[in-house]
Length: 346
Ligand code: AFP
Image 1 (cartoon, rainbow, N blue to C red):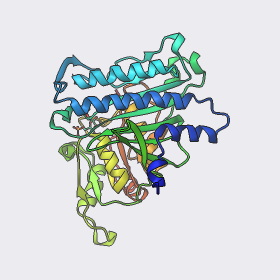
Image 2 (image 1 turned 45 degrees about the vertical axis):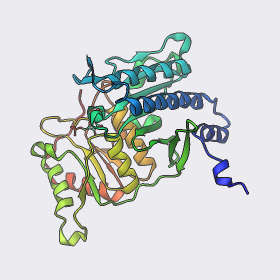
Image 3 (image 1 turned 180 degrees about the horizontal axis):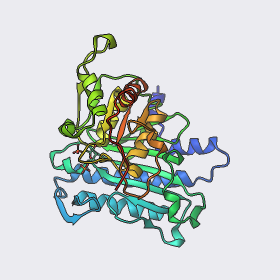
Image 4 (image 1 turned 120 degrees about the vertical axis):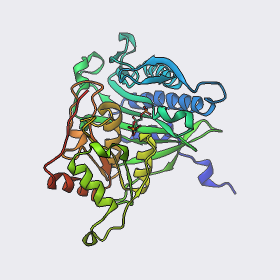
């Protein structure tokens, strides 16, 4: 007898079409846009897998807007993403970590969405074979294809879709379109399709792991220090055991683990980097949206990340994200310590 579960698979495209059918007003534009994202991610996955063999690892000789050396894979992934998004005909603008200015789509190919993305996040670790990923957010432009660039700098809460694809021991795409629903897909390399493997992901309210670059702790403010101390040296009244530390230094991998196991991931402000390190439009907003839709929260320490409005496309913000109980502790640490740094800036 045929195994029904193995012959009736939910691919990402099928999932998108089913979602589209639930919304009779839908035009199908988002489904087509997501098809471009899928193609981009599959291309990056294939490059990451064969990087060592075809000599793609290493520097490309350019420097991006953050003054960081670009890897060959960064350059390739960015070009692939820009081309896939442009040819979908569903975007008017793109913001990429690898491009200084907004990418404006030629008029004949313009659609009603904007996409923000970091095509290959964590790439500084790639020579060591560490997990890397693509992070993206999709926004509906109020004026559609005729939109002007100022329509990009809006509060994070206006995001329509957020997702990431992690290139690790397997290739995993995690996605949300809101409605308190976060789905995880795994690429089946034989089929070349993303298959729904982790439906309705929920983040535990409290975890046992903290994830932060403790090498920066010399520069942390009192609130941040107090919070992480409370995880390492819990008071007897809290009834908690000390948390374990895990930090990969690749946001997609650290957030993916946090989403599945709970706990806290943070890149806080410090005296060296008053706005932390992570970029609002293509790192913090999509991840904050995913975590909130999975039942958790993402805050700067004192405010909700999705309430921020960036002033420039490459602005950064501090971020703490995790389950609701863990985030309540972060908030309490900031409320009980008047010494804290916070800011969003270039
Ligand atoms: P790279 O893409 O340059 O490797 O940066 C990765 C990243 O933006 C993010 O993925 C990490 O969470 C964070 O930086 C790590 O930063 P630190 O090396 O300062 O801890």
